[in-house]
Length: 145
Image 1: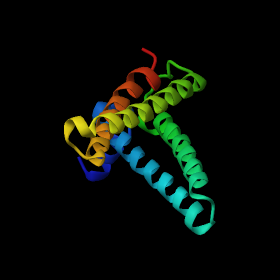
Image 2: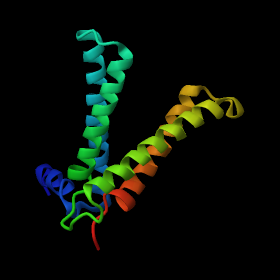
Image 3: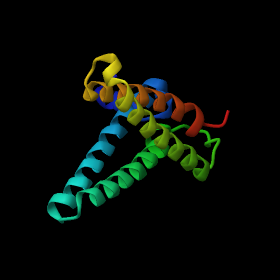
C-alpha cells in the first residue's frame, strides 16, 4: 500500500480505532494552532486585552474542535445517534468537566505527590485527553447501530 493509499485509508471510516486516533491527534494539533494563533494575534497585533483575547481564542478553539470531532474525527457511514444539539450539550459538559478536573488536579496534587504544578498539569492533560477520546467515541459522536 502506497503512502497516499494509507493516508486515504486513515481518513476513511474503514480505518477503525487507529484512524480515529490519528484524526483525533490531528484535530488536536489544528485546534492548538487556532487557539494560540487567535489569542496571540488579537493580543499582540490588534491590541485586544489579553484576557479578552484568551476568551475569544478559547471559544473559537472549542468551536473548531467540536466541528472537527463531528465531521473529521468520528466519520462513519451511519447517522449519529444524537442530534447536533445533543452532541453540543454533551461536548460542552465534557469541556467543563475537563477544565474542572485539570484545575482540581493542579490545585491539589502537586504537594502530596512532590511534583511541580507543570508536571501534574501535563499528566492531567494526558489522562483527560485519553478519557475524551473514549467518551467522544462512545457517548457523543457515536453512530447508530
